[in-house]
Length: 133
Image (cartoon, rainbow, N blue to C red):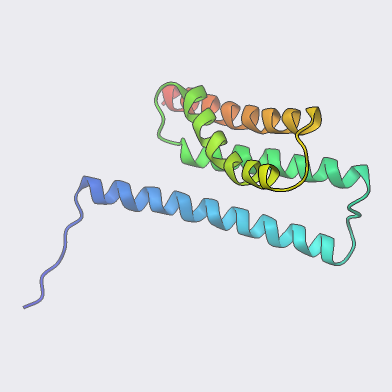
């Protein structure tokens, strides 16, 4: 005998969160493919200052979008939720920087702080957007 499975509230939350994380992964994947194509066809020169600015701008937008998606249901403390998402997102580049022979310098610290600021801003905007509803 076939039976149907009814989703309860917790299952629906899990599915919605899974959709957010899959969308986040898809955004990262598409941006990575776009970026790789630009590098492969030498549209971007890695030794050029424009490359570094473009890379940082792309990272700022990515952090903002991902944090905005993940904190979409936040009702309060958007800055804290944005900070937590930003720290989680920074773990990969931070681990790379620690394990590589690239020393920390003021430029890298400023870059990481600006990425965290982008995440915090997305969290704050999301909370304020949700309060207006």
